[in-house]
Image (cartoon, rainbow, N blue to C red; front, top):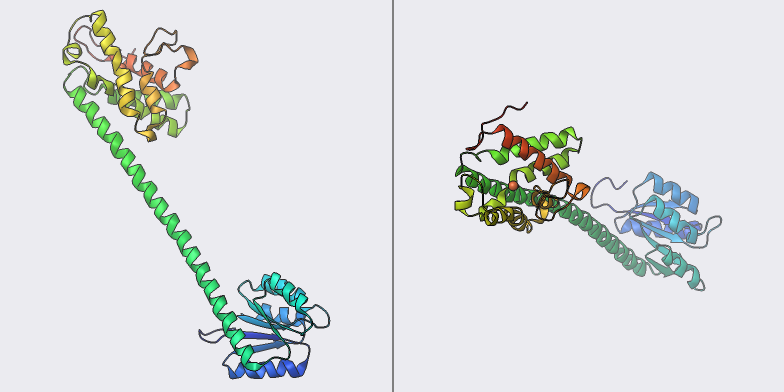
Length: 314
Ligand SMILES: [Fe+2]
């Protein structure tokens, strides 16, 4: 094993003992830890036992050839740098080895100096591959972390934008003692209805936000009309109706609100098609809009108005 950093392990594979010994001796002189194998099967055995950085292998051997050894060795040790030793007249096998993942090949008879340089080149390349793999891994983790961070930030911004609008609704209602708390109550009630309908947590949350913001468009209603006691003229009523459109327009740019905008816009639609602004009927009215409409009626009936005594929930 390359137990301590700095010591690099090399595996020499050759069926001819004199060559094997010469290579082993030379590589040991170059400060490598060297294991040797006389066949492909023995080499695979060694690779399972030791963490090897580089394998130097003959191509022509009895039994499994060097060509077939290459992919099997890489399966055991994917980071292995492989150098092939080939006969002069066997360029085809050498090319095949390269195709299968060997890094380089040397032609026999081998000049030891050439071998030394080829080994260093292969090890350098292996190191660079390992580094780039680590870098990739690090980048991937970094991107994941940053993406999560951005998502958290985005959710925070979304919550803030919704909270700002809620503050606006509060300010709007604060001016009118009969409206004070209306949207908050409608929001709670709508959420309760949605829960009763088993609509799921996420839908319940959106219905609640829609309830909170449903009358936001009243910001565009003239004070004289908002504060008017007694019945509205036809023109004034048309003006009040605009609040659903104005509300939807204010919310439209906030893409994260999604179908909340439609719920706000449709909270005065009626099942029989006599509502506004679009005269939708039946199932055409978004469920969220229908829920808010029901909650609003309930709240209106159970809250005291200048022209009406408060009713009990029953
Ligand atoms: Fe409304």
